[in-house]
Length: 115
Length: 111
Image 1 (cartoon, chains in turn purple, brown):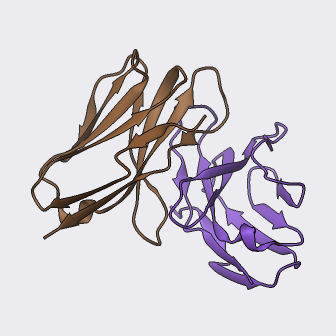
Image 2 (cartoon, each protein chain N blue to C red):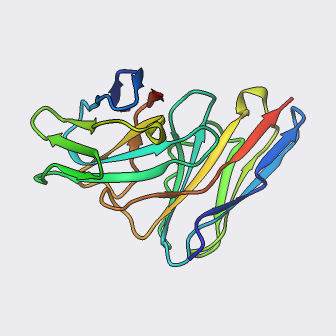
């Protein structure tokens, strides 16, 4: 079946503008993750959704960042009043369930550039 | 806390072997290995579980030493297609949360 998809693939915005990034997980996957990857860096955890449980937002770097998920489907990551340091690739991943045994399947990412 | 990967980068000739290490300060339940090629999404390679055996597919294998809280990824007779950045993701027992990823090891295989 289809893998994780993300849109847009690239986004260029001006400092101070809001952006919304979208993730479509693999159908049936209950867990969804957002990561940020700065150039040449590792994967920085942002937020995690699991079923109907309250999301784990502990990785969000500031209150400018928020994310929503509708049931077990689409998720959107919103960055308000973007700053240049927000420039990065934002990766979404989904997995069949929660916990440390589940493989995460990554989407292709959204490359965000804040001018 | 983020696991520590070493080396940060390695350059090989095709056919040579490499070892990538991943160490954690926490007691680990699982270690996942991913490979990411430039401009692409990370791809799952394998998972090792506490109490589990060494795993591998093709000429890539890995071990998990629970006592030392570390895992090693072994690439044997490397191929050009092995080039990329390798990340380990560690899972902590009792956490239903996410993996914590290392900063990656950049592997370059030259002809």
